[in-house]
Length: 117
Image (tube, rainbow, N blue to C red; front, side, top):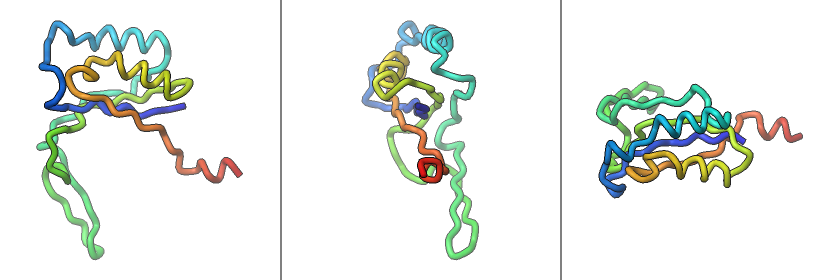
């Protein structure tokens, strides 16, 4: 089962400690296990975002995020796991689980309903 793992900046997390940032070890372990692919990356901060909407037939573009929030998505990885328990175990080892938070969201393929028929 595939999960999108959002890596989120959260001010309520532990203070950042570079010595505790074991991202290289996490990437090596998860790559060796074959559960994390090359699709993950960091994201620019919210102030670099562009929000796009269509309202009344017109495209409305604005700078920055749509919502004001203290938490913001700083990166992502795509996990390919046996089940949610494995995804939780993997996410709990990511350094941002301590310094921020990690959100897991299962993929919901667009054609899932059609394929089930």
